[in-house]
Image 1: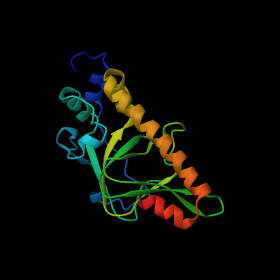
Image 2: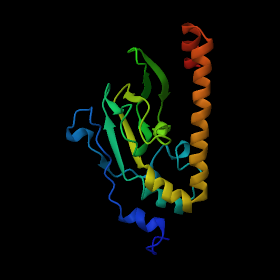
Image 3: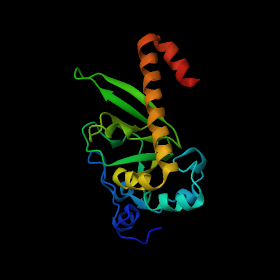
Image 4: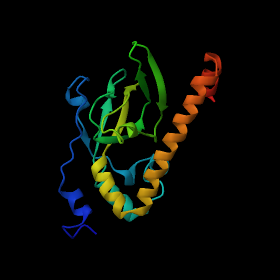
Length: 194
């Protein structure tokens, strides 16, 4: 399993994961990545990335998802223009994503609740395209994308789950475009609440 050095899994074991701190947030120790994120013991496992994995593959996913961090209300998990390094699984709290228009106007592009994954916006350009702001004190699992990619090459069920997450993001974005383009403000609020 992890024994051969030419395997991507062996590389997973050798990498020290330290998620970058948000350069815009208070850099106190409370924002520092905390070790101990374990998919195998997480209460959200059934709705998160590990939902369709067997026990052996969940242990392998644990080797990638080693850290979690707190994001205080009003602080940014990441900002538009920040380098893309990780995706994030929301453990608790809620986060909104915000797009900024050159005129200074801001548009909320999404809301994320526990069990959902955010940060996928940075995959194509290797920089984030929006700000992710905590609506309340929130905890996120930090998933370094290069390690996740390596594991996906070996664990097909995980690769399928990542593809489903990306597809769901496309569907969510399309739905948001429809809401923003065709509904009144009252209708958008009602649609969000539903």
